[in-house]
Length: 339
Image (cartoon, rainbow, N blue to C red):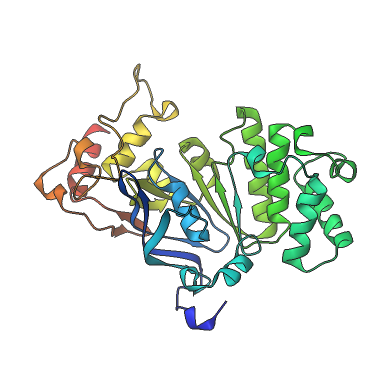
């Protein structure tokens, strides 16, 4: 990575995403998928990226790693990884970051594995390339990591093909392959969506155990607030291609400040006490070809005023707490009355 792209940042920050805009050009118009997104991830920290489908969570991961489809482009902003702006790197330089420094775990393990290649072929080649070892040592590393994620008889099963594994075991293979490269940051994009509840818990336990053993950071993308509550230190809440609230996981669950965060928590069964009917969020997710002006949540928000047609800044409101809302005081006053 070129020293010319370095930028001073807090020594504890591993990834610093600053004001990025990602657009997709389609036949229907320009989709403004990310509209000034900023957040960071610190060393040895687990961070949750949460929000409804279509809010920009997965696009954020692809923007960071520069793996957007051809019609997508990061048109503005900066993505600093260990002080280096990834958006300024050449493609060969970026290939040294993907996998080795930042690993990505997709939600569908079957589509992420080549059905006509054995697990050995799919793991050994990648490990050899990124860690600079011969095939024999790469195979030893692969087997070791397969054992670490709980795959029985790894020495034999490394020669099996993806269809010979269950969905949960395929996801374990992807975790093993990703972590075998010794990354500093693991981005897990809905890693348990395709799995049943029991297997979901097992996979998340593996990710957390390996994260702690290897001392890496985690960016967990999910719409499942229960998963976030159990597996992260901080949360960044996305809505309409923007971050609307950030803070420590426990604080946000205990005392959410943004109307969207409050509505999101109230719509989840496990967070509703003594209510016969779940709360719902009126309206629908904004179309990002022609999004609402100002605060993108204002058409669905009971606190909406004319001021909300201007964009609220993401402002610091306490220790490690940020919110983008003009009416935080009123929101908190109402919550205090109802508690």
